[in-house]
Image (spheres, rainbow, N blue to C red):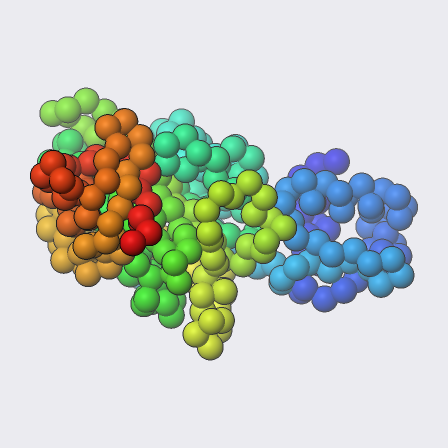
Length: 327
């Protein structure tokens, strides 16, 4: 059972309407039993698919597959001028892993994945990646020299993602240190940055972004923290969700421009906006991990570390899981 065969079935269901099993089996020249096996495989991909005896099959929401040529053509001139290569893959282990293994001579290059079988988040966590429900994007960028304070790049990327969300109708998104995007107290998006290179020489980074778009509860098995989607956050405000292709264009545009800006100017163009979206500022927090601590969050230092003010004075945290303590 090839991926192409399953993609054909997904395309037949993409309108989100209900389709009878008999009509689908006839369309593809297969038996109803063979169709059922394909449906089961799509569920293995994380596709939200409802089946009712006598009524047929229907996707949980209409499917908008991404088109690489369309994304590239819709990018603004300033981004196209960077020579950015854009690709879309139906299924990969991890979009970051694919670009880490790609030829750096082709940078900057962007890879969108419709789904991932081994998506990764920060601190080695799995990133739930059901097919066609969210946005999974990796962008490889080569800096001519190792940037000063590279540790602030994740924060700059979080600002870029917040700018994209604002352009898509959600200016209310905030940033939870260091680079998670939240809306309504729930996680909306995350960032994973993987650098390669030697201090003092060229530096290559792969920036991975996962943004929840239409994910539904049955697709979120294994998630341990409250989450939301762009569609849900916009619906709560009476706003319509944008097309998935438009989300891809907006996010890639802001990421590429941010990396170019960071290359030239460092974190300074992003600092004020990051502080304005800081969801932890002046709240009691607990940091778990090596050298964990508790105290009041007081923003970030020049290297992007979280400043925590406790009984023993101020500490700067550079890694760990942060949660807000009940008062």
